[in-house]
Length: 324
Image (tube, rainbow, N blue to C red; front, side):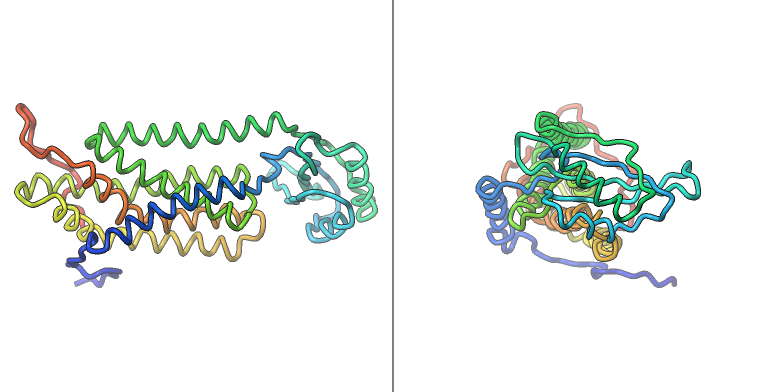
């Protein structure tokens, strides 16, 4: 018989409600704390949200990001992000970099004098360097990006809620989306607490968290729905425990393998994607936790009508025989 790795025993009987006031209650307290920290400390917005200037450089000399950063350290600049740009259409001797400089205040973009000083410092480093484009993002555009990002998260959450409502029941939709918001808001709270840079890449990470987290939750809900048909006399709380236990091995396997990949990005990916990797890492941990301890608790609190309804067909599911 083939050997298979299991991160949980084939049959488990863990009572996930035994310490629910610690697990579920702790989640509620963490969400409240995240809101308070967010309101009091605010977020350390990056260039995308604060406004600033993007300078594109081009040279026949290979890009040395470290040397560029050292050359600009002497100037009175805001946050500076330097990335090398790769494109298959570039010539062999065409080396392109992008320098993003945050504005020092909330009312003005980077001044022309500052841009000239940056170009002079880079010219001293590499006489062959040119500046094909210089683009500025003002505070108005930045505020629109903040609003658009919030709308993206809100619309995505509503779309997920609508899908789960159609796929399952409205109680599942409410539980699933509240669990998703739990993951997102606590992640934002951590970014506010430690003042990590918050930019559009973090918004992309939060949207990724929404998709990943709901996947685990739907697996649990799908098994719960099957068991509601199979064990009609079993109390809802016991059914939820049974469903989480039956899918526990699958949940752990999926989460740990994804954490290994994201953890590698976090450690070895460098400064450019570190914030994105950290947000994804946090989201996976919180998403796994909320799938097991938060979503089902909300459904249990709301309650479900398990009585037979006239004309309702017996539920059959094509995924019923999958080994979780």
